[in-house]
Length: 154
Image 1 (cartoon, rainbow, N blue to C red):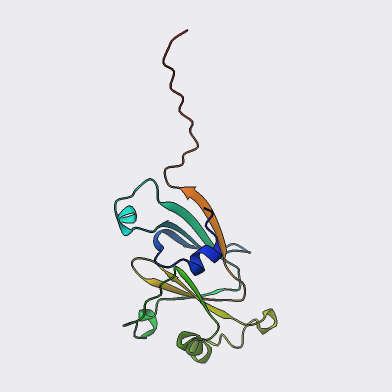
Image 2: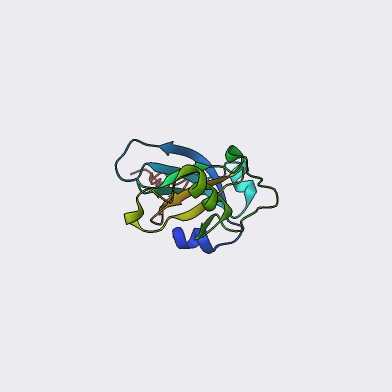
């Protein structure tokens, strides 16, 4: 099974755990998460070699909003069933427009959408004009090393 954006936006109860998050000084995709993924939380908590590795990257005009708590917004009662959710409108998007000026920047690029990345520990909020790029990096245990067992010596 290939993991892509559609999979992460339509598969309920698939869990993500962050391996790394970077805000790079790159021109094209500066926001990047590398995550472990699994349908079973035990696989994530025990570092199972069969968990998936996934990279999620947002384009350069994306705005990283962090978490709701960082902006004094109550997160109680919120839970997304999907690892990534795309919202056309939201209370957080209105907050960002009012207090961060997101409605005034790069308007020629189109409409900002609110993306939520749900991990087992917290949710991250991003405003972006384009869908993120999702790359399936394979299983954690995939090293590319081929082991061949020889039973007899020549």
